[in-house]
Length: 158
Image (cartoon, rainbow, N blue to C red; front, side, top):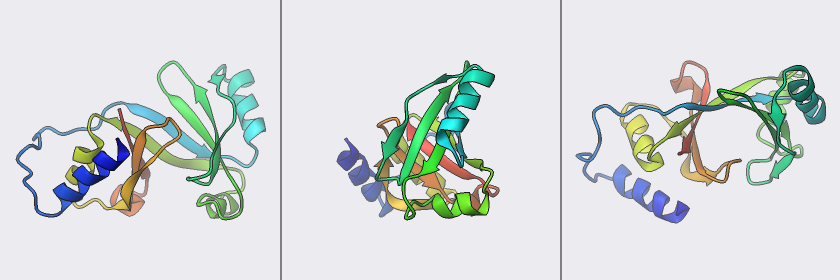
């Protein structure tokens, strides 16, 4: 599936027709808010015992360089992130924000390939050339925060 998605994105990015685009393209619902935290277990306990969230177990995602716990609430999820080693892309972020900080917002999209082409056509840069598989096992693509009011945005295939 990911290979087919990447192939479609490549074809669309190199001069193929945009006629299949909908004029009313929009993101779907907010899937989660991600927070980089200094202590994953302590943060999971806070969300579970103090805030009443249902928390997943700890998940290691080596391809993204993170460990994560999802805290599920009635209307969304909070993804608690912690670096998986010193080469993690969020290690520097945590060092700059030792108490933790909101890292990104994730929105669902019906068609990730279409969403990538749409945002690029509108002048928004992506971080990376191809989607990766995210924490939910679905393809994701991040958008450059400099093009999104200083906020890192993740698009996730619905």
